[in-house]
Image 1 (cartoon, one colour):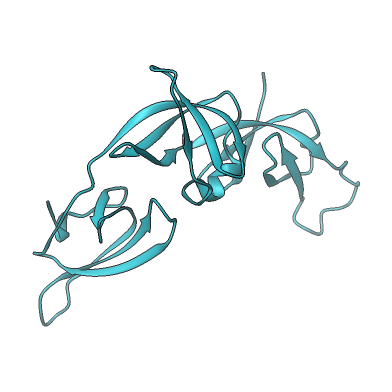
Image 2: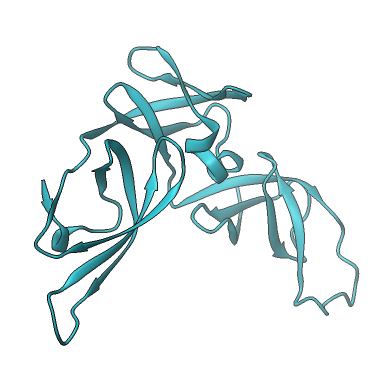
Length: 187
């Protein structure tokens, strides 16, 4: 159990018998009355977002989660398939749980998988990842009306806005939280 005043972004809570990730937290101390905490929770089984308000002295159950390493194998209609790097067991994370992160994960790479009880419920990505540009249009000289950026597609199918000098075959660093271009990577 954790006091509501001690809830922090990134914690896992058990709300309505479901594991939730604290996506955002706001502590409010009004002039009159007692302090309270507003939290934005993401259900790790369904992907739904829930907003809750707790008095700062209330207690909420923490979800008992643990991590394990999983190598990404492939995706299909049933979800994203991974292999445990220690036991070689295969498991699937639902499409809802992975969500937009599906365009950021690469086949063969190993990621941290969040487990609740025996179910994989979320994938933790590094803050930045390197991708190869697979589709890029050539920049047209003088085409800087749009601020000097163009859209390219990387190996996972993700579309990223990049500077005009990026071309097909280049490797770029992408922020996995925002999906934005960071810099070009030289081998």
